[in-house]
Image (cartoon, rainbow, N blue to C red; front, side):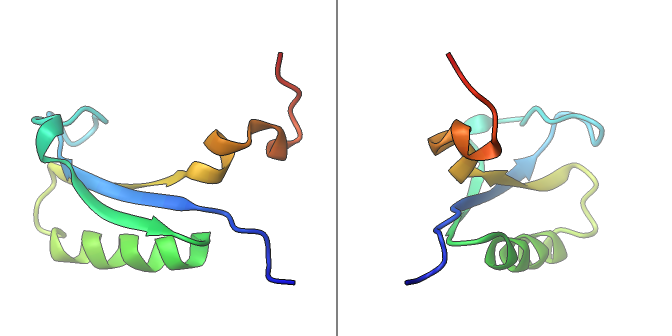
Length: 79
């Protein structure tokens, strides 16, 4: 049986300020992709950040989609 699928989203773009998490134009956010595990997402994140290393206003993020899809998987009881 394959390992449990733990989806991760990698995305980023130009931020209002380097210390912010708000995008200048949310319609222009770059969606790198959805990946089956953290290791693959991290590789994609490193590739995206490497292309924009000289731009302090551009930042990429990894979102743990599996936590949004199944909040109980974190061991927390909800509602």
